Length: 455
Ligand code: NAP
Image (tube, rainbow, N blue to C red; front, top):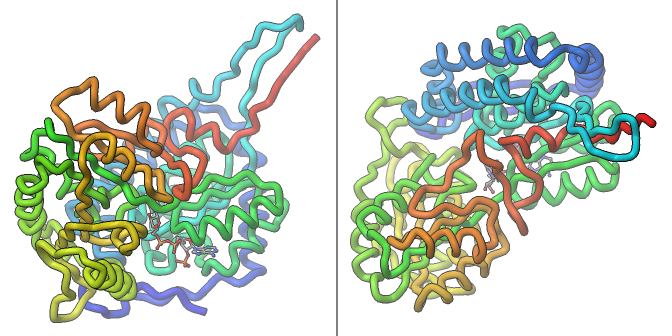
């Protein structure tokens, strides 16, 4: 079976990639394992040197990588360049800090010497989604390789050009051949790859369904797994919020990547006293984003990545309106080619509606009226997801209290847009998955935390 890249702006086929056969996959695993056996003995300075070279390639060729992303999944080129820059920053961050994050930790016992050492695990498989086709991969690969592991990438079917380009970045940076390999395969081969004894762990970023399936497989094989899954982030707009600023941040967060981000704001919990004013400001801010060709410099909002994803979004919008949600703007598929969808605001969203219960992976905002702070917290936590959340209030102590103690999510922000940052751990709870990426926590996911006790 071939993997097909289709330009979502016009529906045309860009390229077809033949799927890698089982024998070639086994060979890639073997080469990865052999590369690992040598790589694990290299020092941090050497690894950091290569990682900085990868960062330089990412920065130097950001425009090319942005154009690949635009053609394969519809990301506006400005955002694609920023994504390549973020990958470079992630590589540099781990080049600088990996040694300290993995330095042996002495522990006082009665032994002559006792300490904790951090050893790499071996070949780690990464199953990745198309929405941030570079950043999702680099935020796994930079810490995993700096820790001494090898990486195998199973990327999403529609971004195989990006996947091949990423493998090429590592090769040109001077990483040993085989240490980081792209496997052009469909999800159906992932189970068998994991069964190979030389593959020691798996990380998946993607949907809850994919997560359940891969986590179950990894569990049956007793292999370490990290799951970064969906989200339905709640943004709480309290009565003392700066509404102008909140509306602008909320619109930006909902529309990032055409709304196709796990940590996009998806539910807007607005307390009754400020509801009318917020809805007006927010709808204006959302409607100001216009869609366009992602390859053009001025475009802020591209198409969705695939037409089937747009059809699914329309089903969720229609299902919510049929149950009483009111559209304040958007809500209909436009005429013309491509997978475009307009910024949409639904209000009066209630339990039982798709916009309340499900993740909306596109530019559709669900406004859920709430009575007060307690009600806002209750509704925020009334979700099977727990990835990110944000609180808007002019009282910083109130915001920090709610963010730190009340919200059931892995990434909680105050008066700001939820985003990933190499310095901060990233991950979720509940159906949003488990394990953490980024920061010191992320690099310690794929290591053997080893006790050394010398009497
Ligand atoms: P997806 O359908 O789950 O695909 C993600 C990856 O998993 C793809 O490489 C896909 O391969 C593979 N896959 C899917 N089902 C599989 C299975 N049963 N066995 C093995 N591999 C399988 O997700 P998506 O639609 O591409 O991405 C959107 C989802 O990802 C959203 O829910 C979003 O919230 C989530 N996401 C989460 C994070 C986070 O950090 N928490 C970040 C970004 C996105 P194929 O393409 O070949 O099917």
